[in-house]
Length: 54
Image 1 (cartoon, rainbow, N blue to C red):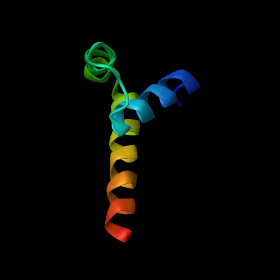
Image 2: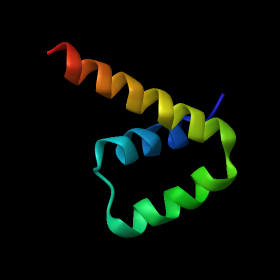
Image 3: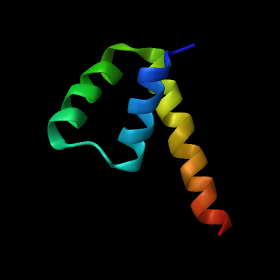
Image 4: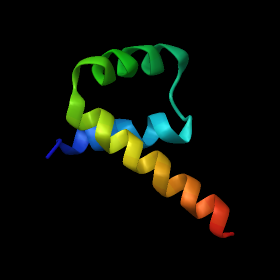
């Protein structure tokens, strides 16, 4: 399980609420951290499902 900070940053990344610099830094984490990458994918899928259901 990933820690709360990475979960929060994942949510910010998926929502587009990061600055350009934060996004670039976070994408570096995604490149090397499989678990965070899977979590981001799950968040993106949930977000897409919510948009499609409304």
